[in-house]
Structures are given as structure tokens and as C-alpha cells.
Length: 240
Image (cartoon, rainbow, N blue to C red; front, side, top):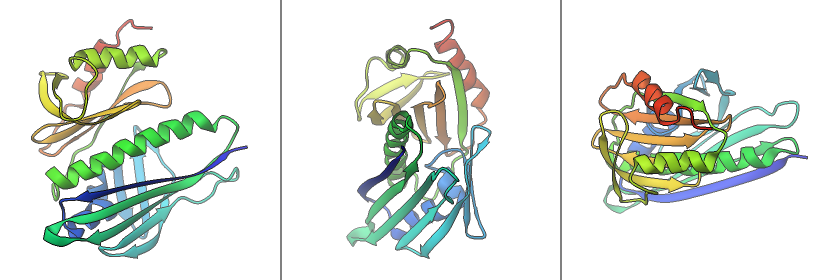
């Protein structure tokens, strides 16, 4: 049967339209808040996440500092995803930013994918706002690592929250990860949590394929991916 969807998200950010445009329209900019590694060339946005190439997204509107839109081609079963960004400069270097994600998910089992997509997009947009507020102009080196298979997601989140000192709320200070990193929680929903430090944004995501994902964004150069893979493996070792 399938499901047509539209997910609007909006925020006022303490960043200029130029900062916003660089973050949404260039490969290094998208790397610094979205997922995986990205390239923008010849009017196409290409994203690779966890060794998987997502469908190319063709730019359909590019009005610098104001309006950007791009989307994937429809597949035979009607699947597609499109992104639209509307930018409006405001006083004192701030910007009103609106992101609308729309598309179609085919099949009778679209609900789980839609739920994961919705919760993930909420996290990505919150990360974009956090990036523009605290790290605008800096470039991340994305880290994407997958933990062991998870069969009980409520327990998996309880395990991670225990590492953070209990279920966190935005604004809470927490310690976590290899080396006992200290940071501030900037976002949490039912399938994600995001933490900011002085030089990185750390994100944990409930993977649709059944693994906890570390999708981190260090802005000072970082080659710690294998350490995060080992940390996730240790955290969920022998847990059903």
C-alpha cells in the first residue's frame, strides 16, 4: 500500500544565511551535520552511509542564500525522498531555517521505516541547528560505526542510558565513551541521543537494520572509529 509523507522542521539559528547555505549545499558542509560522507557535484547530492550508497539526489532548486531543493528519482515501486530548505535572514546575523522532507515509502510494512526516518530526521535537523550555533564554518570528519545486533531495543537504550548516568535530558552534562568524554546533551528522542563537546557532536542512533550506530562528528580531526566500534561491542557484549 505504501505511505506518502511530509516532515517539516523549523528553527531560528544564530548564524548567517551564508553559513546556512554552506552547510546545506556543499559536501563538506553536509558532512558536518547530516549522515555519512557527502559530495555535491554536477547538480547531484551523493551520500554514502556505513558502506552503502544512498540514491543520488538531484538538485531541482538552487537560489543561493534563500532556497535549495533536491530529491531522488522515483523507483519502480514509487519510492523517493526529497529535501527542501528555505532560508530567511533576520536581524543581528540570525536566520530562520525551514527543512521539509517529503516522499513515498512503498509496501505494507512502511511504518517501521517511517518511524525510524522521522526520529532520525529530527536528530539530523537538531544537529544542523547545533552545528550552526556552535561550529559554523568548521568541517567534520564523520565517524560511522555499528554495534552488535540488537534484539531488545528498550533494553539496549537502558544500557546506553546507564552509561550516561540515567535517561538524559537536553542540557544534562554526561560522561560516556572511550576515555570518559564529557559533554552536554543537546537532543534526545525515542531512537536517538546527541551530545555536544567543545570540538565534536556525538550521536547514537537506533539502526533500522538492528544495530546501535555511533554517528559522530568531530571537528578537530579524529581517527577513533575503531575505538567506538570496540566500545559498542563491549557495551552490548553477550546481551540478547
